[in-house]
Amino acid sequence: DAGVIQSPRHEVTEMGQEVTLRCKPISGHNSLFWYRQTMMRGLELLIYFNNNVPIDDSGMPEDRFSAKMPNASFSTLKIQPSEPRDSAVYFCASSPDRVGANVLTFGAGSRLTVL
Amino acid sequence: AQRVTQPEKLLSVFKGAPVELKCNYSYSGSPELFWYVQYSRQRLQLLLRHISRESIKGFTADLNKGETSFHLKKPFAQEEDSAMYYCALGNQGGKLIFGQGTELSVKP
Image 1 (tube, chains in turn orange, red):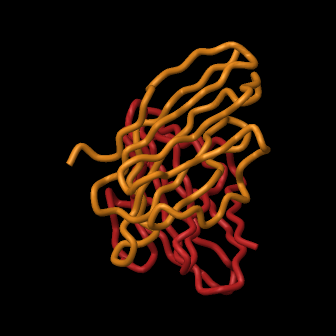
Image 2 (spheres, helix red, strand yellow; image 1 turned 180 degrees about the horizontal axis):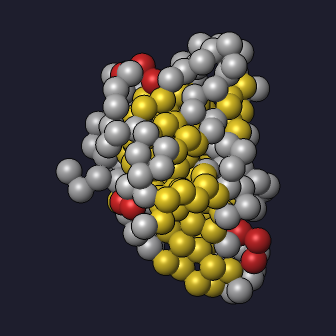
């Protein structure tokens, strides 16, 4: 298994543009998490899914952010419109549903820069 | 509410010195505590979890429910321990939240 796969690894965009980040979790993992990492706030949980259903999106900053998980092997995090303060590294992680729950495997992250 | 606090953003020690990275948590239920580590240019990865009561790379952490703490300790720091360390708190629902992280710098 290649682990959790995220794309793109780096994204530079201009303010106002739409940004879509993608994630492929580990096969068989039923929970998927999106985190944002900044120097000021560390790792913030944005949203997590269980069996493709959003369980807790209380960490999503505002309506500009949305996340979907149309099937067990794919999730997207979208920012529309993007702003400079959205610049951060966005991590996707997945975990098994029962055994090992709460033990996350992380992707390499998507570094977003909004100019 | 679930909350994790790591009071130190940066901890700098010399090689061979003891290390303690502090972590305090707030949670009304039965907590699951973890330490994750991110080495330079590598992915964030699990270091240890409290229910395993194990020592990984010489690091240990004891859950103290009275003080709501889960400090990470190592008696003799090595240069290769330099990394970003995150304390994390999980609940029965599978939600895992992290502290702000502590950067450990071990100098030669």
